[in-house]
Image (cartoon, rainbow, N blue to C red; front, side, top):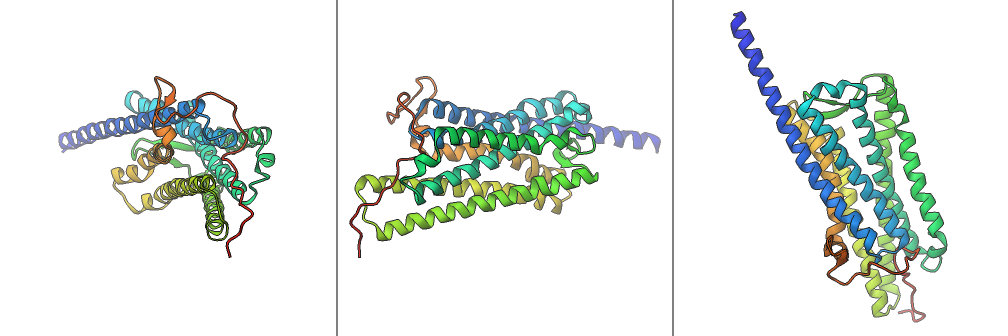
Length: 325
């Protein structure tokens, strides 16, 4: 009987070790794909000036956040899982979850700022340059990162845990009162509120676009700018849907199953994937970035890599005097 139990235990340990390596390999692979996708977007935004200063800086902010998440997963979480799984319980190892939360919050806040910028462009076409100036944009981006950093300060405490569980290959909040509070309010509810606010701003922007389309006569150039705003709307819609799906997956669907691989898919895998998809969506919806070549530093569409940067996210859509009846 003892020999049988020892054999079963050895088999279970071997299976757990194999599963751990498999999950780490998946995390590293998906993370490196996310790193590559977001590096492409970062380099394109640095060289191409087609987005203008405000929109370019905000887009850069959430792309850097996406890159940060992918980098931590592929170059920190995965290697620890492969070579020293016990380190996930060490104080330094637990900081991986803290850093991931920081980048997540920065990404969500950057998306909110993007939606606000587009809404201002549509509702105040003649004033948005004075609203989203270079100084205002820089302060707004810096503020959102400071706010994201402040949100994760409680995680420095050993009582507020968000650590990686090697048994299910996922990050989970601890059971202490501090962990429950920050997990529920500063993470889940905060993300839900932000994504709902983003959706509301995008809806208002879309309504304004539809109203202008029906009541205002536009030149061909103005129609192109309107179509660009519509493209931004669908870009934001896809990104918001991806983030909302990940939140639902992490905080609801993952608790409906007991199988560790299904839990892994609804939590860690979904988390890595959403930040890869976020960068991929930017590439798919913008030809200048999609056709950007890292080696040459230019887009095949002829996007400018030099020149003066403007404070506006896009050129204003100023209606003609002639109004259709």
